[in-house]
Length: 449
Image 1 (cartoon, helix red, strand yellow):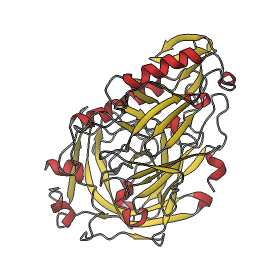
Image 2 (tube, helix red, strand yellow):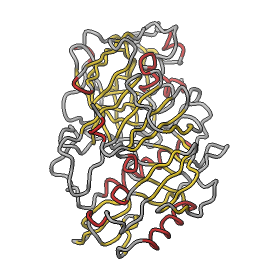
Image 3 (spheres, helix red, strand yellow):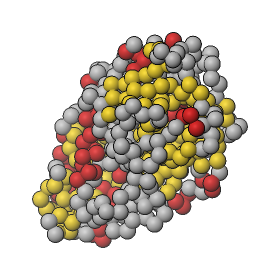
Image 4 (cartoon, rainbow, N blue to C red):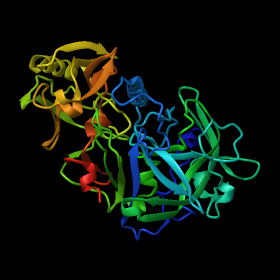
């Protein structure tokens, strides 16, 4: 029974499955709309929320939650996500959301695009105990293409699923924070609209219909689209089409000038952009990479080579994650970086805020060398520059203009290369070859046609 808690979604990978994936993409690929959760076109947008240039504590809260989530996964020393029940935290803190439709007629949903997430599920009627959701909840009975996984479904038996009195395959997911989701396993048509409003659809996609969900969820969230390396992620569920490949380019939003059209696309399969130099994936489950060095203004910092390495016991390392806003560096890497920035900065240091390094100044001060450019050197000569305008963000703290770092120290022995540092970078994932490609661009919108 414990296996089923984690594995009820991992169904599309086996050729013997009773539900066959069919697609209108001709096996080439597809794309989906991708935008920030705080974008005016996002259903999660709150016009009354904190303005862009005021201090936003939720950035730190969301980042801390993600760091603890990854650390909790490491603590379980996972050797394979296929043979153990993991108290995974369904994370409501991802920064970017993806939109598509489920069913016939299409029912629009917005889900968190989460490269650290393992599977796909949404709230669904009938609800015995659903958390409050803004907007209608998906009703499988109104979709002519929806089918329920019955107890006779080989998938249910294969993964040790439980049977209801109605002979339906049921799942239950328990989380470390006592949140949970219970429901039934189903299959339905997924429709994606991407670049130039082109549409692609796939039938018989497995996903969870959550009928009883309680915990940390917010009303704006319909569910989660896990995009991790585990077999239950959306990219693996649709592997016949995605071929284990996808890419994104996260938009940069300057501190003093929010983008008026903040939308790009998540690309899958042959649509994925595997541009730039590749660096090998490390470990399992998540997108671990090997960070070999950090330099400032072209000068390498004195950081031990093993500071960011993933250890044999599954601890340490650095994870590339779209769901963590801030970048976290273990102390062995953070303190040399901070010390050298203080030495090179021409701005006056201000009080730290939430553990982040701050200087007195405005967004315009981030140009012209007042603060140095950080360069991250990944394995296979993949070098990523993070200029001051991306490494720092303008805030108003206690009525004073400050520019504060979008990185901080990790006190959990794990590093994360977060979404702010990934902005205006085409990040391509090849799960088959186990490589991650990165290429910097001036503006994601200029190449996203």
